[in-house]
Amino acid sequence: MGEARLKVDFAGLQAFVSVAELGGFGKAAEQLHLTQTALTRRVQKLEHYLGLRLLDRTTRSVALTAVGADFLPKARAIVAEMTSAVGGLREMARTSSGSFTLACMSTMATRLLPALIRTYADRYPGNRIRLLDLSSNDVRDAVLGRRAEVGIAVHSDVHPELAERFLFDDPLVYYCHESHPHASRPRLTWREIQGSDLILVRGFTATRLLIEYQLLKHGVRATKGYEVQYYATAVNLVEAGVGCAVLPWSVLGAGSRAPIRRIELVGPKVHRRVMLFTRRHTSLSPAAQAFYDVAQRVAAGQP
Image (cartoon, rainbow, N blue to C red; front, top):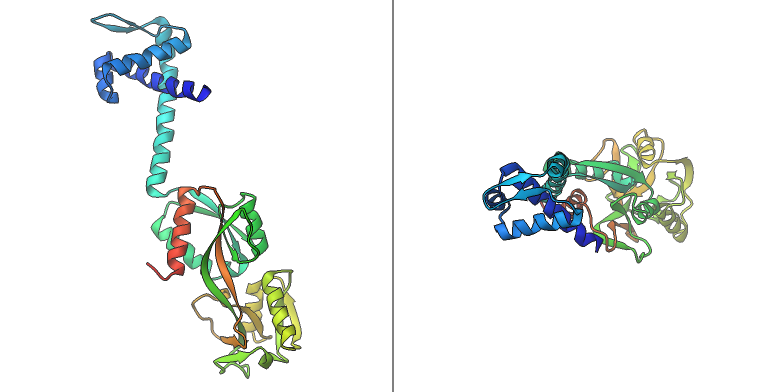
């Protein structure tokens, strides 16, 4: 009942303001693309709802009552504000403009995410992204908790309230300095990294557990020379020739970084499935939906 009244009230306000500003029902009806009968009915419903007469009308003229003249500036402001708000939403929908919050795992944030955001920014230059740089599990929690509309993280246990869309496979590879004995190898087995001075990234993460499992499975007792908090730190130490690391391919993205070598790890090939996460049954804002679409196209190699 309340919603129905609200609809009638705004339509009546709009009709009243138009009649008052244009000085008659004929011009107001033309401006609002209504018949004069429909316009008259809207004004009458507003007056009935208010319990006051706003317009005195005869067969020849229309004039504001004292109450109507006092009310007109307020009604005009309400109509203008609502019209502006609705117009802004329509423009947002048309241009996919606005801002949104993206949660992304830290391995993506080094190289691949900036390139993706650059593509998005080129297409939607006025949009803004609030970025949460988190672990994969925290990304999922951020989306579930509505702190982020879209998340980029590694696939794990299916959650009934999360929708997932595959982006790309992210293999684990061996990072070493160009002076390392393995630097010229196109690929290595897990067993062949026995004895490497491995730089490990600390934390109870899916990637760390995946690496530890493969090392244990293949009986690899790698020397753990350093343990760091961030992937970028591990890469910097490899670049300095301090040690080697097993890290996701996405840490460096599609580019290269001298003097670092990335060597394929086989026997078996191990990879993470990187996914886009959103809440099920939750509509994305236009800006977030645009990013979601861009991410899928970029991952598929489409322009």
